[in-house]
Image (tube, rainbow, N blue to C red; front, side, top):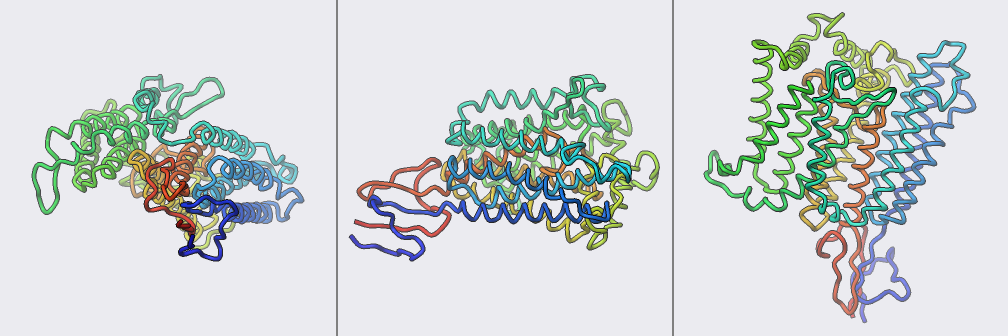
Length: 496
């Protein structure tokens, strides 16, 4: 036997079978990044207390320690259940989640009287509830990793999940406004003191269905009927699925009164369709359909009113927020002023006035944080989101089966689009939406759904990065497809 291309950093394990490619799991790198993320969260908490209380209490580290215990538990789950998963996903999400908890605790301090601030319990208020929701969300994500040992197994339930997704999407629209509407958008289901946003879970169910459907139909949808300006356009009879999803997204826009949710669902399908067919024409058709439908809703809102009136009002506020800055445009104006006040470097953690912002713990948390960390700090947050999206797309490229590629690519794009619609709404790029900022905003629905999204990405990346094993020079196929084009750490090849 001769060893070929054997790096010193990858020694051959005693008793290793011939024909084995070894790859590092990178779990130690994940642990190191996780420790760094929690140190940053603790430092953020200390700076908040220094600015709000003019002192740093002996318990400033407790929230970061509690989060560290939760995320360390998730790290151990990944180490045993998905050992070859991407090592950057968990630390990046943990940093965002930790900063969100820290900012919500900062809001608790701001709402308390000066005499009560130093005695405020660490696990009380909005910050304490978010800590509890973080624990629940991480447990759900760990449970999903334990149940779904192969991402392809979920495709068996694609039609059931598709139906469940449609029901969850439409549920707030058919319920009375008294239990489903907040700030003009019907996205919630409230029963007593408990509320849930079913659309957050619907996006996961619908993506599974979209991925499964497009794997089966992509050859038909890839056919071109004619070429225009160098772009191949599909046949007219193949437009049916896009038109159906477009109609559903317009119903969401009209009856749930939220542009962001409508754009999210339609964008998920169109981009997944593009990934499946590699036809740019589908993106162009999707853009024309969506913006054409939105403009039609705007015109009907002005001329007819009725179910279109709310969207027309939101569009008018977006076009001229300072036309009525103390009433209809108050939310957007305060958000823009907060971002402007923050400038390049911000007022410092705990140095802003976030309570002037309506719904700062939910819709406007990005503006509240932006006032205190400035443009540079917000850019860093967006880079972290970009890193998560990039790692999701890398998982889609690494995995070998078509269903996994579409699922991971769709999940990564969905996260990116959700960040776009909330940041675009706050900054005045698009009309305000009722979406929450992933991992930052208060609330259990968004946090649980997005942690489940990360769990699926971890499972797909584990399949794509998993080493190939075999006996007698014959390589076996790991979960996720054939062994070609392994991604990850340096590998070792032993040839008989």
